[in-house]
Image 1 (cartoon, rainbow, N blue to C red):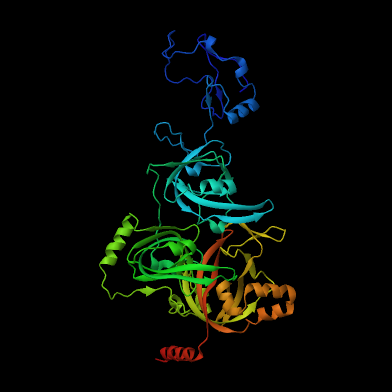
Image 2: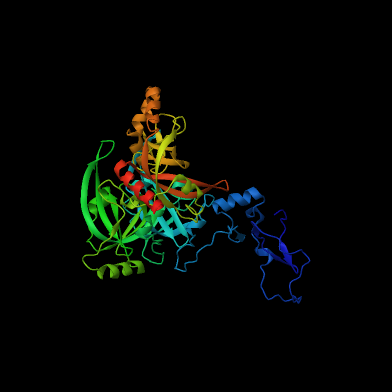
Length: 533
């Protein structure tokens, strides 16, 4: 705005306005309607004598931006602030409350904002060590009707706000920083937001009594569909607690501390049962009667001893929630007879029930089936094959966080940083991930092996093999090649994926069992008899 003169209407002056961010919608000579050109104006205009002194009017773009940032523009000189087209200010009409912004409109370029949201998950306090010393951290996830965001509190803010924040309460939050989230693509199921809020000790957090912020939103998956998901996928589930096996204590893999675990058995109206694991403090404090309905938002899918579920840091658990799905489940379970049977997706024998009766295929049948693994769903099959190709020179493991098992980043000083736990660790756990070539009489496919399956194939921990690679490469190479020319019954998952707009089929081991030559012989005889008859 370069013109510093006041605006004149029929000889009378208006106070100047600073307009930041505007759009030309018509030319100067464009006339709207048929304006009344009489000497009397319907609207009273401010006289030239009431104009603010010239010294109070910003004279340059830099002064305008400076006064906008510090909110020092004279109130007698109206300013129109630029509004993000994706940001809608919520007018709450609640007395003296400030105008609220939706969570999904927040970005790092906003200086002053206020949100009102419900806490849907609160973490425990953790300690970390970095170059500046030791610190504390906790986080909580909040939501409003526009979306979710993660809020992080470090050290002083951690001590100030930890006892203030409680799950399911509604809070008004302001005077905090918006920063780009460090969450990786693998964590996208946790929080669908590119940003996160960092609270410092001067942040304002006020408990609100209103319940107008929406309740938790679920997208429930039936228990009989769990085989459609990968290990570590995050889903919403609801079921009836049929059994509570109590709390058990066991030593962690590191052998440094004991962990508490509570195992529940859930069922739903598909007559499917699955085990749900609670860990740590959640396991110890869980006191709920059997036949209660439990809803879990962001339960993690596992595949140890069949399909199972677990509650982790970002999960949210509700008992007998006041929702239609819970009421329907409760009525269904109450109507059952005492001798009803359920199909288990997980057991305690070490044998995966869910993969025992998969259709047996040859590799050529797998490769030539146009529908297998397509149409946005995974398919499962079993094949008798022999591992013939192993490439130990390619990437075969990754450094992982001992707590969450996610990949960690080398800090370059001998320590590692976990983006998920937001902490520094001294030594990572190495976990397997590699691909092998599997052959039968009809063809060959490449199949990915993740940690649990790779342990069965190699019979050695990844940490030990990683040390062997550095200290005795010949022994490492021989260990890796020991998989070759061994035959197994492979249970596999097929799912098409798109990479750089190109479709490719991905095969993954979900279970591997040694060949039982007696059973395989009988099976072969039965198939031969089908052809002869």
